[in-house]
Image (cartoon, rainbow, N blue to C red; front, side, top):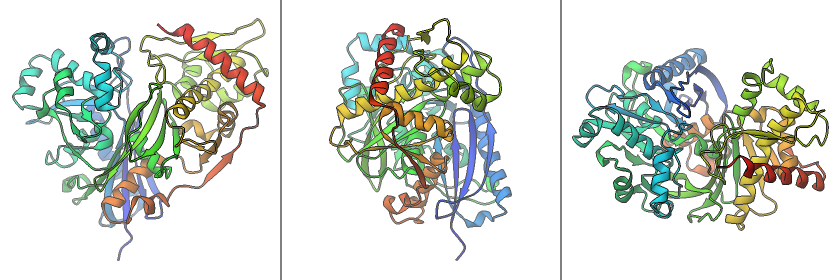
Length: 497
């Protein structure tokens, strides 16, 4: 029997990547294409959905060519995607009626404020596990329907479809045969009842989104149809789908309650597996679907930091520190100890647990002898200090799941830095497990697809393919850690609206 391979498609905010995995979780080949961002107005972020699909096809073809393997050896495709980003397209022509509105986009902040002021947030949280914030998909869909001429009438006539990026890609890969999403992506829309595990009519009515637009909700390991033969030379089954952070949770092997991961990319997303019982957050964390396999739903608490790796980019683009992340890190490491500078990188507002769309970034604690090294160090520290905000909130919300011996499994671009990873351990006071293979999001998509295709017998079997990790223990004295966090907690309220 030929070796069973799995092709993972990872469609992210800044790039699209495909990786070919074997059944042990080993990466055989990969290919990447950058993704252009568009900023048509203050706080607006858009993508070209057609560019996204073209890149998906290109990277899968490039990966297979680079691997030298036959497409017949691919048991399944797994898809993971930037969550909350939405596309609305014409059902007949397949053409998007508006650029994709990206998860970072804040254009619907006023609409969310109106719904909150009208007293709807408690109902929204009860049904969806989310908060009223422009981060999520539902208000973005309504915005497109209201702003594109004739769109709402066409939607109500059944002429349009919408979905997150996974749905858009699946629809195109299958030649329009399958309009589907998975439970993790659905749980990020403000339209999904996370207990009933179906679209919520009260939420559809509240946000004014016609149900006819929406995809069918399937498990993370499920039958999403097959690609058309022209994509890869033959039909290939699509058997796994998950939003990027839930895919990373799977790729980090966090399939048991109490296991937690954080992915440090453009933003940072921390998820704590809480098991089959839906947790209730009193700390303004999100309750979301961690996975749904075999009809069994696993929940998670999630905290989202909007700006993590993007803050390091800002050091170059905004402050002129040349040479990329390595130069920025070298500069940060040269900072004076206990410099007292605090950077709050609220460039697009603050995420959990603050949820303040109007907050803006600031630098505090500057003295005459502070300079770029201290600002760079404080920028890196901001990512660790925001992480501690999330950890403290999770401890408050799920003390039984997150015990004193808990560890934080990390991945993503910033985790490539051993120095930052150690700083994260120091400022959070947690044992940090740094994955040796950083593309855990793509790996998670492959593992879900492997379960869906029968390559793995269960999630637990698939989780055994988790990459090896390096353990980093806190080394900063307690009084220094607490002093740094106190400065942070003093600075954050000053940038809030």
